[in-house]
Length: 307
Ligand code: CP
Ligand code: NVA
Image (cartoon, rainbow, N blue to C red; front, side, top):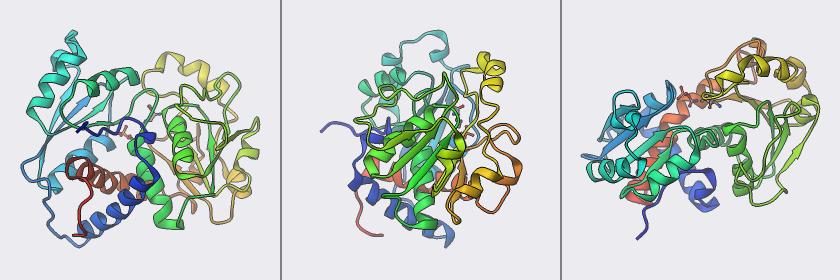
């Protein structure tokens, strides 16, 4: 049987997400009740980081240990990957020694090539194109606080980056709408976003128009990891794409604000928003832990009976 990977959001079906969201709730409840749950006893996770991380490393490492397994942290600087060993060879070797792999890297092509040569499941912990683990946790957070996301409107304000692309894929899989506003020259590229159609998003020149009536307003840094050389140019281009109180005011009265973090107050979001009443960024960050535990359990054990 083919090994199942999680390389982009549309690798899973709507039914699989329904299972994962229910499972996340169950696994979170166990954690909150201090219940020991070790379904992944003696399973080992390799985490390969080619970019920095706080939340992704912490949530995968703590999560694997909480499930009874262990994790090994690898980065480009200390491994042969940083000295040009082919990713295909690394995949063959690493996947003979561990049960599951999480990778944070640059181009999506790198993780696709790794997965094609891996004997074990591979999880995308962020690439230039996608960040599916984050959107998994974000949508779980929305459901936890507001119920089903189907038919709802998500406003994406800012860069057409890995988070934006993943929200656009999620809208197709889970049947909701994304209202996107990006500065001129930074528009979404449906092919790069891996979209099937054009029916689940709408583009707005003015970020206020994208925010109007939205159930969830979300944004991300103006300059993603790997694009630092463009920082000064981006600061000028993105100056009007800052989520502020006025944007939240025109969204739904009970709208949520999310940000994958790390955030830059005064750039993509004002402090009054990220630290204000609509913001659920700390719950969102915590839910990375619970959602990824459900994800690893699913990739390694398949659907489990209610426990
Ligand atoms: N949101 C997120 O992935 O955070 P890190 O870069 O800290 O892992
Ligand atoms: N878009 C950001 C997300 C960081 C978690 C980046 O890729 O740097």
